[in-house]
Length: 333
Image (cartoon, rainbow, N blue to C red):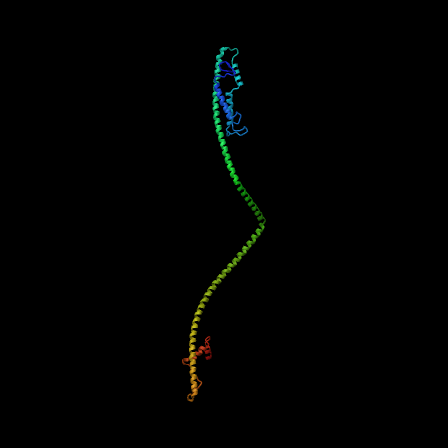
């Protein structure tokens, strides 16, 4: 049973005037429990072992406190009711009569006022809890959306990286092979450093020798160029002399041809004179009168007349000239 605030007890089956409101609140709290689970549950977001999905703002602890307060004020247990009734009965002074009913009524009214205030506070807390529930629902949706987005992005990135993995592995293998070759080349160079130094020294000496040889060739070329220029000038002078000699020879040949023609004419005239004289000698020898007259004149029969215009002296001069002898002039000389 309970206390109706008017000074009388009521049975367990009876209810006060505000029972309908309490039933409404009970139904609403039951609906909330069905929706979000027990106060110590996971609020529909998974098991208790799962990490909190309140974004680190402590929404779960706030909801737990609100549900605890609401269950205390909305659904008092039988023990709470009995303790309240005993407390009210204990407030009666010993030996009090029915005349003190007014005081108890005042106390009951005060209790009703306190209960009304508590109900109002519980309703306000319930409204706040609903608001927090809605916020938590929105937060859960956002978290789920972020998780999906993160999973999709992670899957896409994973697929992209998986597609790039063979190329990267091939590149890594090529770089390792290149590094191995470089290491081998480095070791070979370290082993052959002394040989390379000796080879470089030998090549440097060869370069110096070649430079000296080139210098000798350069000086020889300069000397040859000087000699060539002097020879070219000498050849030019010789060519001029040859031209002059050729012209002089041409003149001498022309002069010789003229002289040969003159000698031929003289030889022809001389031969004609000889024939004429031979004929005259034969005529004179065959005629005694002619021989007598010639003997009387004291002229020798073997004397030959001199050619006209000093021809004999000219023939002798040509016969004595070197390089101009001919069979005729040789006989004449």
